[in-house]
Image 1: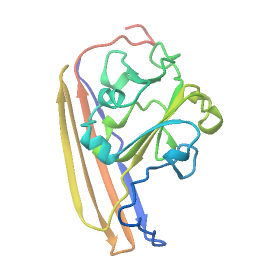
Image 2: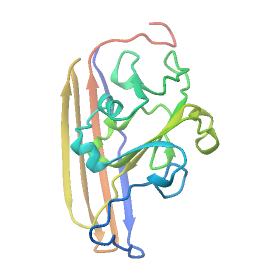
Image 3: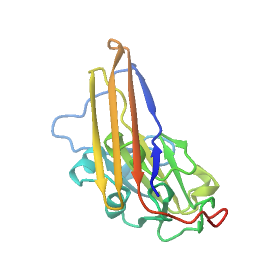
Image 4: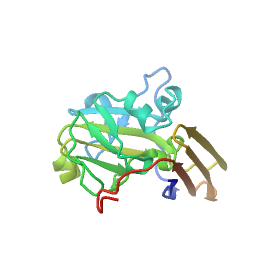
Length: 213
């Protein structure tokens, strides 16, 4: 059975504001995360967080959830028969045993909760500014489905230079994915937008956990 799914289309809008100070020449790069719902230095966050920047994703060739798990201690993805049916597992904690069950790991895109969303493959890892994997109970910050942790995918913000690109992914199990984006100004130096979309397909079959077929 061929299984396909269109990734969500993302439109980001950027409006210029205050000019940010640039780091001093020779200063070490500092990773800023929003794991506690506010911008903080990764080194000062008092919880267990793995953060991968866009450069990390490119250098480490992170183009799939499996490769993301390889680069993130304590993270894995359980598969229920197909690409569209995977769920995140942090530190081995998972209560989901069939399709439709709730998970112990919540997933967010730019801080917005996305139930049923497995990961960045549906819009491309090249569309990410960073990935934050927060480990351990986070229900106070992220809600009831975050007992084992949470994953926040932070997308790239639009810029004022016109550009576009995409990527194609192929793999075993008749797996095929394609993503693309365009970005540029709407009003010069004032408003910019970025639009991206993608599609993933995979072969194979799986049991419907709702009706047993």
